[in-house]
Structure formats: C-alpha cells, structure tokens
Image (cartoon, rainbow, N blue to C red; front, top):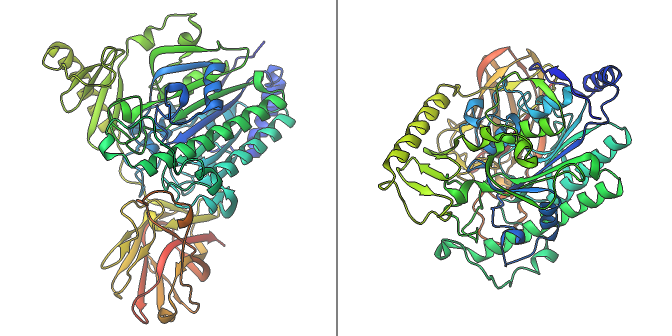
Length: 598
C-alpha cells in the first residue's frame, strides 16, 4: 500500500545531504518511502513523431522503443513546444514556458526564472534521489544550473546544443571534464550507474536521461554510419524537394542508437528486478530537425503546426498501468509533472499552480476526463501561436483545421467555420495577453553564488562589438574570432553575488604570429591584465564524424590557461574583455572564461 502525504517545497535548492536527512525523517514518519515508484524520463532531442517504426516509418526499425510503447500506454496526440528549451521548461514545471520567462534558446532567453519550482525540487523534498544526464538547456550559471533546480547529480551540458559528440568536454556537477566515448552512450551508462546506486541504497530515484540526438551536428559513429550511408529511403518527407537525404540517414542512425540505449536501460531494470517499481516515460522535445518522413504532418521543428509539436509519448509501469493501450485524447508536456505525481500517489502544496492536468483518468478510465476533454492547449514560438481543442487547430495566421478528419492539415476550413474560428481566436488572444504579462526582463548572469564556487562565461552568453565575429549565427556552442581592433570588446551583463577575489581561467586559440597580444578583463573599477605567451593554433575537431552539412559552429581544441586573479565588487555590472595590445594580425580566438571564488 503506497503512502500519501503532502510536502511544502520552498524555492531553495535541496542538496544531497539535506535531501537524505529529509528522506530519513519522512521515512520514520510515514513508514518508509520505498513504496513510491522510481521515475525515469527519457527525452530525445529533435526526434519527430514519425521517427519510429511503430508509427509507420519503413526506413528503419526501432524495436526497443516499439516494445516500450507496447509495454504501457501511448498517447497518439501528445504535444510539446516547437523548440527545445520551452519544452524542457514545461516538463520541469507543468507550466507554460512563457510563465517561466523562456523567450528563446540562447543568450539568457533560455533561463528558467528562479521563482519556478521544478519536478526535481518536489521529488527531492519527498526523499527521491535526483539526477539528470545529458542536455539541460534551461540556464547554465548557478542557480540556473541543474544543481540549483533540484538535481543532486548532473552530467551533461547546459547549452542548447553541443558541437562535439565524441570525447567531448562536458559539465559534471559544475566542473568541466571529458566524456570518454560517444555522448549518448556515455549519458546512458552514467544514468544506469546513478539508478543502480539508488536501488542499492533502497532510495527511490528520479532520473532524466536527456539525449543530445538526433539534434545536429549529425555526428554518427563509423560502424553505425556504415549501415545507413547508402540506405535507400522508402518514405520521403512531406516537403520532399527540400529533404537532405544524408541528413535523414544520419538522423535515422542516431535514433537507432537511442533505441539501442533504451534497450540497455530496460535490460538493466529487468535484471535489477526494478521494472515493477519504475515508471518510464519517453518523449521528444519538438518535431524533426529536417524535412524527413513524419507521418505526412505539416511543419517541422520550429513550427506550431502538427509536425513541429507532435511528439511520441510512452508511459510504462509494469503491472501497474495497462499495456498496449493507445490513447487518442489530446495531451501535452505540461501534463507530465501532475501525471507523475498522481501515479506515484504524491501530493504537494504547489508553490505555483500548474497549467497541466493529470492524465491518470485517461490511462485508467476510472474517473471523469472532463478536465482533459474540454480544454484548449496552446503552442508558441517566434511570433507564431496555435490553439488546439480535441478536434481542431487554430493558427495565428488565421487558419483553421479539423485534425480528426484532416490530420495532415490539407484543408483550411476557417471560412466555413467562422464561429469556431472566432472562438478559438479569442482564446488564443487571451492566452497571449496573459503570457505576455508574465515575461520578465532579461537576466544578468550570477557570479559567485554562496553555494557554487565556479562560474562559466562562454561566448554563447556574451555580446561582441566592432569587427569581432561569432563563429556561427547560432550562439549555443560558438566562439569569437576576427578580433582585429584594439577597441573591440566582448561583454557580459553580470550580477556579482559574493564580493572578493576570483581566479580567472580562459579557453582560447592564438596563432604563433599573434603571441604577445594582451587581454584585459574589467568589471566596474577592477582590472586584470594578461599577456598571451603560449601559441595554440586551435584545430577543428569532430569533422570526420559529421555526415551531412554542418549548420552549427565548428568545435576547436581550445587551450585552457590561467589569467590570474581579479577582485570583483558585489552588484550588477558589465564584465568586459578587451585587447589593448594586438600583435600580428589579430588577438585571440575566444571560447570561454571560468571564474572561481578564492
């Protein structure tokens, strides 16, 4: 018999020791929490609804994911947001991403407001061990970092995408390290190790395995690519003229790798005897990142049409929920947090009301599904919005579609159903106004949080002036180059939380002829000057594994060096890098700073 209790969850971060003490206290009060199920969420990055053989894709096979869909319930019409960071914020909070200040995917617009409480915060307060492995994408600097949002373990990257999938530099609990091997495989093994340790300790775990694939760059291991590089595609994309077939082949190969890793996880849970104690959730964060086959749905990643936001959703819990059940009711990523709390029989005094509802009534058909059936769901990205009822989609361009009779959105019926169009349009306008009222000002980067000694300032979060160029239009994994003028600068808006001395490290590249250039770091009236004494002609890495045209920044093997120490005063300021002396043709190529409180 599972216990049921209510826990108030404050905004502060629960760390490992505090969570363990709380677990012991609650265990003694409620007779033990072992009865509460483990929770595992697996989320793919840019996998479309059609990137599964169980959804009719004839181009390849996904046997482990197909079996996962059969082992529990699958939702036929499950919606996420059109791009990564909003979906991930909604997964974490059960609330629309705009409420949490998510306006974009980089340069601070992806940071989840600190007054938002995450599912990890709540579950950690209930005695769960919490770990996230892979992509985060809701803020990098603490307390926006996963360790500040309820996770006791983090192994992955906080950026929107990563540019290198082999032997890559990643973040392990706030410090940089190298992940040996192919990232999705490494993330899988790290998550298994975390779950295994939790099972041995008889403490329920909440684990998010967040794959970085099939997001580009389309880097695929050689042995896997051999099976796909000459693949004859049986099904083409809806917009077949714009399909890059090598991109499609690479995406399918990367999804096969996900499928293999999901099989490893299921095998581990079975061998550990934990399948009956573990809820497994599988989804993607948006539509496909290319014009490949996607069930003839309209739109791809970035679109609020069906193809951009419809995702697979499988929920499996052996012996506890029905198997091989397909649910046609409309559901969304905002529903996952309340659903998991309901399934696990955990009740919390929510700090913020959730927009999502529990899907448990739809899973079991044991209660009214009115809250699911009669609501409207909303999607938003880049000036486009959509409102969905159980049967219809209204797009902010003025289009209306019957999704039951026309799931491919071939026929706009706005002129035929003007009353329905007007009704959904009014709902969408009201929702847009409500969300707009909650958008906050851009966040300054916190430096020197009392609970976290290191702060990373990557090129991604900076603004450059003059002739300095970003290595790619997408900031996420970029660097700065073409630093040819002494007046050119790189700047961050920062908020120093702890006054004092900070050690400063830098990742850079410098051609031999440019050695001797000077770099100055300034913040308020503090300055640190450093002369580049070591050449490092940073070379591109990972290119041999990239199987289709690279649209993101190349990655280079930048050098790490110490600049010295600087005294930073508390408060908001602008932190600036300048180059008062340039030797040769230009100053350094710049990747990242690290500031460590001394």
